[in-house]
Image (cartoon, rainbow over all chains, first blue to last red; front, side, top):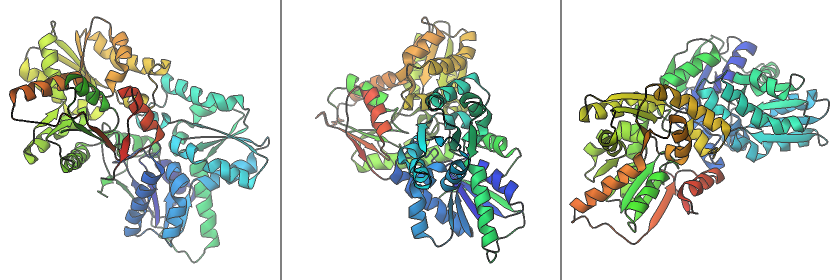
Amino acid sequence: MIGIFDSGIGGLTVVSAIMDTLPGYDITYFGDTARTPYGTKSFETVINYALENTEFLLSKGADIIVMACNTASSVATEHLSKKYAVPIFEVITPAVELAVKTSKKKRIGIIGTRATINSGVYEKKIKAMSPDSSVYSNPCPLIVPLVEEGWLKNRETAMIVKKYIYPLKLKQIDTLILGCTHYPVIRNVISRKIGKRVNIIDSSVAVAERIKNFFENQPNMNLGKNGIAHFFVSDITEQFKKTAKVILKRDIDLKHVKI
Amino acid sequence: MIGIFDSGIGGLTVVSAIMDTLPGYDITYFGDTARTPYGTKSFETVINYALENTEFLLSKGADIIVMACNTASSVATEHLSKKYAVPIFEVITPAVELAVKTSKKKRIGIIGTRATINSGVYEKKIKAMSPDSSVYSNPCPLIVPLVEEGWLKNRETAMIVKKYIYPLKLKQIDTLILGCTHYPVIRNVISRKIGKRVNIIDSSVAVAERIKNFFENQPNMNLGKNGIAHFFVSDITEQFKKTAKVILKRDIDLKHVKI
């Protein structure tokens, strides 16, 4: 079974991409809604949370772990890979590979939470793969609460996105990585503000492709394909249910667990 | 010693009011920055957090507990009062008493987090004290992240506040309770949007007055008055330090504890 965790509800964009790319695979999702958000918190705290979330998914029988959270991916990947024998997938490397492959001007922008941008992990990975690329980033901490509130089409959201995006527009990037799993939900707003000619990289799609490739190269990994999906959250409210429905475009049964 | 807790940094507005009203009293503050915010989470989760925070403050020697968080005050007061022998102060009753006393038109508005407004506690308390009052409320979930980001004078903040305040303005309230400890930080923005003639009730000032009265009536309670103040947080980042400085208008030493 594919185990997926996120700081909250936003990681359902990754679930959605995995369901599209790997239809029928059994999935268990854990959203840490009791401690959300991660992006404003320290590396140490996020690492502890990522370890606890992984333990939970393993206890449910996960064969692989997908961190559907850029903040956790930025700061906890090494810790998880060292500690656990199962394959660990993060959302950063697949997005970086896709960005490097498709950027013609080699001017790549990244938006994410403060913790993700401060970690510098995107810049490091891009420079390692493509040393002559120019990399520009800007933290966008208010986008997560705006999306969680469902303010997807509000004028205020568009204004705040514009403010965040403007410094990257000035740098004339040709590729923009959405470095947070919440951002694909307002992809059209972001695209309008950065300009239609800028290629937008959605890490949820990139990681789903990567997992598909992994399975193709590991024919011995026989994961369940009964189309079973379980969704666990550490806290449950009407707002979380509403946002989950908006992202997955269908009703799901969120189960409350204490971890 | 006075023990004070909040979901994060916002409760420092209460510390500031207590320091002004009760100068010299020893204070220990705990901000649950690792699990902030509370206002978007379920009652059950907030109650559990409030119990844990109280245990921490008692272990540090608190003689009284002040919940400097409206969300916790809304849903956890009874649980805490039943479980602990020390006096428990919450930020709601003092604000309600002041509002009822000063409102001439008996049209009272309340803004707060979604959990606070959904609890209905303000409305219940106002109606109990003044049955013929009209009470109007609106949840303002995005104000906390805006304040935590330090967006105090941004145009977007003013627009979002206006959107939240407008339905209350239509109701022609003459008194507005700031039902969240973050809101006094942008009191001037709120005042401009609701109209200068509306009387604004700041629960941090109201609770400080209440504690002062309590001490005057309990001459046997000899709390330490050495001007010692300790500030603990469950997570620490540069942004938390910056916001703390903005609220307390001075540098403080935030100590990181795991709870």
